[in-house]
Image (cartoon, rainbow, N blue to C red; front, top):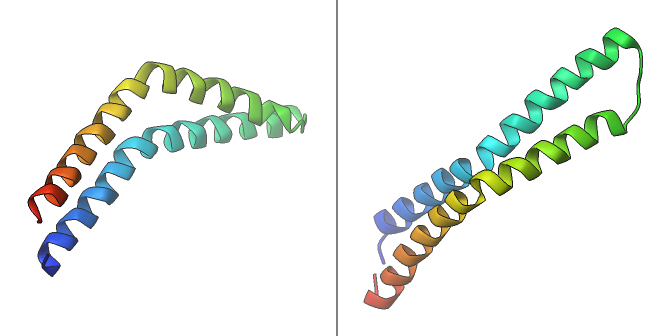
Length: 88
């Protein structure tokens, strides 16, 4: 196992993490900003108003795109196990 192989695997890990977590984090951030603007405009500062919509949207996203996310993770793990099996 040389340094180039390790570097390639680490780059793939970071890209996979962005592909899996990125959409969820972006949606959560956008919803949080929209709710915060609405709270500032109406002067209603209830903590559950930011938490509940984020929770619902992330749940919906996981139901809709969870299979694709798991597929990406499965494909990556198959590649890693193949590298381990062949002795890299």
